[in-house]
Length: 531
Image (cartoon, rainbow, N blue to C red; front, side, top):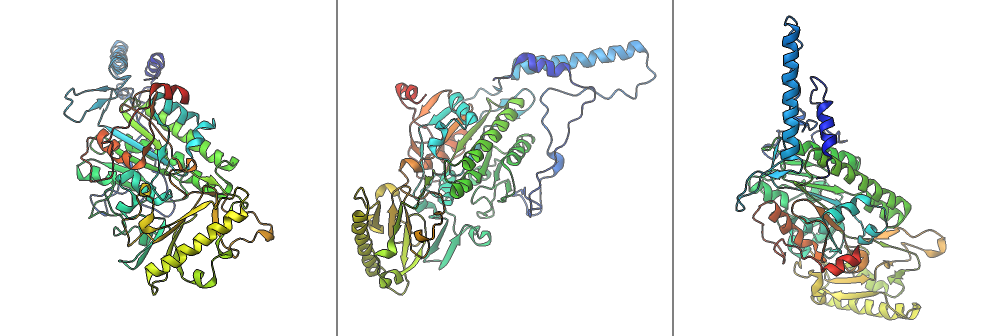
């Protein structure tokens, strides 16, 4: 651990008499009076009285103010005893806890760790920075993430699931399932069997458990009598057969990353029996800025730097609590992002006839067009007509393009590339996909007229081929489960669920992982090249 021994001794020697542990107020979440919720009963809320600033130095000096009649010698003896107690506590703290050590030696049992004053079970903090491109880590704007990668492990990149958009991938990260298996196939989609529409910005509808398949890590933990805490992760407000995270914070745009870090500290400071072993944190600001300004705009880089600093605060807090070698922290993104430009637009209404356009009932994704024909049409016949129309569009684009490329592909559902893992759930996955190249977008003249002189929006887009370089996600991690300086081979994000269950000594639910929770380490020479 990086804690300096002299610094710890100095902290011990300067401890003020009768120093009291101060209580920290709960984060105030606008419009959510009871944001932190226990799953044991609907009306049981975590009391602020159990949330305290952590104190790992040792016992505070006893109150001796009432002893006024004793002799001077007796008071001096008491003071010497107090100093001795504090000194012994500091020595024990430094010798036995500065690095955090395991206090049970049976490898067949879940380990217990001591930070010198408190016992800890295996713990994972998973932080998602929505929309961070893997290339961002090479731009020298994230010194903390770089530090984590050097002191722990870093993947060359993580492969998001198709389509590389927010809700499907956040659910893949915590269930280990591809979207075709867990059912969240987009941010908005129609289910032909339910005759209902999922829309991510409509909580009253999207939180219904009928949409959410698989078992998220926080429910796996609760089922096995372990605590979990989740901050704004997509899907965390959903009830699974009466089970929810032990503690959860509903989504709000008004909560900063620093406030979320404060909440993590509050949870880590709980007694062992109340403390969550899995903590999930969702951070949306980088993705929001990327859409508005572009993935590499100053505004987006500012949000990335702010998130990096907040994670730095988290690392500092872990070090102050002697948890650096006890708690595992993983920082991921759900997908990358591509810059857009009005020179990379495909006007599909220039080629598709009015009759063909009228056959389209719903387009359920962007920039990939997930096309569903009108319900009264014969689906297979309508799909064939539209497929041929987009083939004509490809020829048209090749004639217009300087490089003679169409810059998109079109697929019928039965022809979707197997690497998409996206054709099994036919009641939710539309029967026709038009997938543009990264940075290209389908538009109509009505939506964007280049002659009006307006800038094209959004300036940043994701949802392309999930294996394109721009779509790649980040993964950096440190803690007792990760060896320092390891460069990891690229892996699919569905592998992460089993990595976490392995660390937390949980029996995983059924999922699509292939690595059994063990990420592959790259060859040493490859690691040196990355450095």
